[in-house]
Image: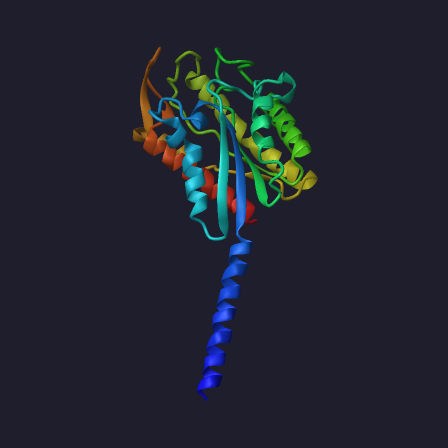
Length: 259
């Protein structure tokens, strides 16, 4: 009798051990490339390497069920537009590609591109290619996405809505109310992109975060207070705001990879 009970316990232990190993094997490892501007980079933060939004995205994802190792590369560049990131310019896209290629052979991990571009496209003047119309924004984003899908078959692309900035934003570039209105016109274009790729490239291009725009509009304290040509403006998140934004991106990525 004791021997039978012992064997049962032994079998149960082996089953649990096997189950645990299977769960460990089923964990998905993520390699994330963040494409963006100064907000993604972490401009104005004392230590962007440790405090920029992508840092908190990775930390958030690493704590989620079914997620293993999370590696990332922050390719946010201050002042950049979708025009700057076009592959044919062979500048920012090429730099990003070099970073992404470091993950290319890691076929055990899921390659993800998290994109938030549009803030600088919306400027009235002072950034490359601005002001970018909604139609041109769509075309530029499509060009970038198409190249990513060509270079990294099987990757996933997550498109985040650009966050709100104050209508008096005017630093080295002029944004103001006109720019903010233009920024908002890009959101429907992002929705159209996601819908289009759902037909041509199913399960590869996803809507990312859409909550950040209203969140930051309602929480001025999450922005750095910057002195500009039209008074104190709000554009770049504080350390706490970067954490909030990074976690919003993380939630969007987690949702996308579980669809």
